[in-house]
Image (tube, rainbow, N blue to C red):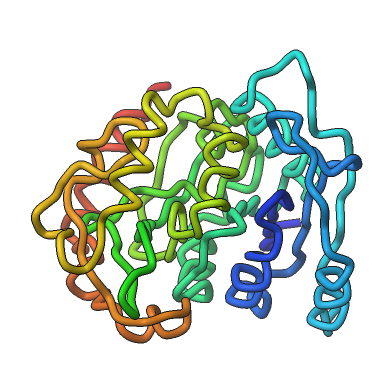
Length: 288
């Protein structure tokens, strides 16, 4: 108990796990990969998996930390976001309450997972009787919007990402709606930075599929935005556009190149901002 257990969900974009697992491998005590036993998405669509992926996984797992967890993760009576919640809950139970339950999506890439683990360890006491002391440990996501012109467009303001909890009473995806502890940690989130066919597949099958109000208008803006015109445009989010107000550009054609080139000091929320957020969260949940 009190170990760092990291969970991933295997779905249509499974190949991205080759980029999201390596940054956490060394500092995780165990890694669990959940996959539906019939290869179904949360919307009930099926997908194929190239056997070469499992060959890569076996070769990569030199310390034998990785477990495949197959189960029935699709319930036809539920909408996609409800199946999302259900699978994450089942995965965390498999990972074991009493450990840090870290869930990372396949398109999220930690910049410094070792530092995040240090932050988790400051709250190890919350792993005792976790149901009574439900807590969530957040990081920040740099949301990548689109690869273009030998680089990537990304959202200027990072967004909160709830990554770990001590008790998996999920309400919406990874959010238990309990106290959040904010940390100065960053993940690169490939989000909608995919080719168009992959993006459409994601929009139709992820947990937010029914929330995208005007898919065609969103896709048109995404398709026509590039390095030359991004400064003239605003409001890029797929649900409430104004939540992603402005874009920036970073050179690099791979996650490794972007990680090296992006100016994290200009993006990372300050220690004062983090402290203020945590002060507010402490008192908000003090008597709940």
